[in-house]
Each structure stands twice: as C-alpha cells, then as structure tokens.
Length: 472
Ligand SMILES: C[S@@+](CC[C@H](N)C(=O)[O-])C[C@H]1O[C@@H](n2cnc3c(N)ncnc32)[C@H](O)[C@@H]1O
Image (cartoon, rainbow, N blue to C red):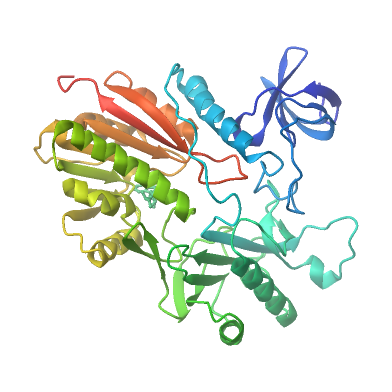
C-alpha cells in the first residue's frame, strides 16, 4: 500500500480522535472523514509499520445515523468532527470509546460503564473559546485581495499551524461570541494591524479570547497581542463599549513574539474588573482570562453533582454526616473542593499555577468556606500528605490535565491509600493507563462518562475506586 493510493473500505467502529477502524488485506486502516459502518472510497495519507492512515474522499454507502452538518466549515475545521452524526449515536460511540480505552490501554475488561450523561445543549454550550489570527486558508472558489490573504481570525485547520479558516459563524459559543469576533476582526483588518509571525518574530496579533458565564451572564473579551499597542487598544475599547453594552470586562493579554502559543506574560485590564463571575449551584467563582474552568457550565453541574450525590450516599450508608479529609488534586480555582466542602471536616487542594491558587483562596472567601486550604505544588513531582487520620475517612479526587498523572503522583496516592479515589478525566486513555497501577489495591466500582463536548469526539469520564483492604 502506498501514499495517495485509493482503497474501497468498509468502516467498523469509531476509534480514537474521530477515526474509524477498517481492514484491508489483513492490515489495519484508520480512516478519517467518515462514520462507522459505511462503505467509503479512501485515499491513503500515511503508511506506518502496523497500520495505515487514510481519508475518506467519497461515501459510497452512508450510515443510517448520518445527518446533515449545520456548519459550513464542517470537514475542514477540526472542531466538530461528530456534527454529521445523530446526537444519541455520538453518545453511544463515546461510551464505546471509554470501554475501548480501558481494554486496549490497560487490558481492563468487564468494567461496569454507565450510559453517558447527555448534554441538554447540543450547540452554543461553551463558556470559553480562543480564536487565532494567522494567514487565511483560501477556499478555491473565492477571490481574495492580497491583504485578505494575509489576515484571518478563526480556527486552525488540523496540523496546519500557519493558516486559519477565517470564520464568521461558530455554533459552539453564543451569538455574542460570533458578533464580537466578527466586529474585532473587521476593525483590526481595516486598521491594517499585522499578524504575528513566529518565523520573523514580529507582527502584533495572536488571538482573541471570549469567556462568558452561563449562570451569571457576564462576558470577558481578551485581545492577545505581542505588545501593548495603545492606539489600537483604546480605539477598540471605545468601539466595543459603544457596540456591546453587555461586555463586562476587556483585557489585553501580552504574549511573547518568540513563542507560537498564546501563553501570557502580562494581562492588562483595560475595562472592567479583569475577571468574571460564574456560578455552579449556589457557589460563585471568579474566572480570570488564564485560569481553568470547565468549559461547559451546565454539564459541569451534572459532572460535579454526580460526585456530590455519590459521596452523600456513601455517608448515608455509613450513618455519618461528614468524612474527615478530602484531597483535591489539580484543584484549579478550587471548584471541586469548594462544592464538596460541606461533606468534609477539612479539604486540601493541590495545584501548580500560582494565579489559580490565589483565585481558589478568594473563591473560598467569596463562598464563606473556612475548612479549605490550597497548596501550590507541581504534582509531576508527587505530593506529601502526612496528617494522621483514619484511612476510611480519607477521600481523594484527582482531575488532571489530558496528559494524566505521573508515576510520582500515582505512588504518592498509593502511599496514603484513600478509602475512595475518584479520578475525573477528559482523556480516558491516560486515565486507563494511570488506573492500571491501582488495580492490585483498589476495585474500580464503575465508570460514569459525561458528555461535556457535544459534536466533538471528546469525553469526560468519572472513575470511582474503592480500596480493597487497608492492610495492603
Ligand atoms: C482539568 S483541570 C481541573 C481543575 C479543577 N479540578 C476544576 O474542575 O476546575 C487541571 C488542573 O491541573 C492543573 N495542573 C496541570 N499540571 C499540573 C501539575 N503538574 N501540577 C499541579 N497542577 C497541575 C492545571 O493548572 C489545572 O488547573
């Protein structure tokens, strides 16, 4: 098999990253741009030792689960790979992906996996989006001026780091987000503002951040630039205030011209307080331009509500009012610890980012929580918990980034052996890998996937583990 060769394939199940599994003459072929159970004509993109990657270029027999995508950029923009699939089927596939992750990565079979908790909103659910400035991806049938070719604000095409699709509509965030992006792009284009080039280490514009709280209705907009450009920032601020009375705060995020990412070096508040409030249940949180907050507010309530109810039922079954201690690993701005604080005598959060720790402390004060503390710690190096408490009263929740936990953190947890360990993850593959180390000492009671990201192949997954015996 060679690159660019065409194959007729019958797709089987969905696998990681939106690909479908298929076989050709005994060899595994991973096909993108199609759905499970379709007959497709596909062109080979890469030939690897164990498998081949291909892209479907014609659907010969479509799946009955296929629907018409609503977005005109579907297929090119990599964001919503499942938009052509009925929502119920998206959920079935996500459940199967969780099962596959545990079986393939860690050879853990026969787990109880609950049905995915669906999202009430299939679109417009995100509370945060970052658009990128770059050269424009050119559609063949459209005419562009030289200036237009150099300017676009939107999303990167997968694996095309120097070009973005200039978008005027996205269905993942609100209408406000669409209006503000189009307005800002139009203003900066007319002003002749330059786009950052990593190669030349010059140019002004890197990105545009929009964060909005769904339960409080506040809006934060951040223009990400390589330097503070007074003329542009102040003129833009005035125009935004005139045209968007609903805007709560506007910030200028300064990010080095020497890096491709938008990592901030400084954040200047130009208008408003520099952060917004969001609520989960009756608890209020400060959200800053660069602090982590679950991107789907309504589903975050379902995700955390599930954990709260589980622990409440555990307490009920023991006839106890509270557990002794909760360790909240990767605590971010303190959301999990704060939401659960009423079920514990004391809560300790561990988090790496200083700004998040500071925000977490303020969030605790904001919600009158005084049994919680936060420790700044790089968990890649593990952590120490030396307090002497009854193990049966020690609960640990970990909610790491996509990369999962390091061996050091796993060993730190195994050293203290909490009676219940709840692992929340947005990447079931690293979650399954990490949980394999717990099997000798813990029982994985069940998995509960939650759909935080409709239209995409991403899935959040809660794993509930209970210690087998405290003697081990
Ligand atoms: C998925 S978020 C979870 C945040 C929080 N539990 C929540 O739901 O809002 C992961 C968090 O881990 C933090 N983090 C990433 N790497 C870390 C590390 N090596 N040590 C400690 N914290 C880390 C990030 O800053 C982020 O706040």
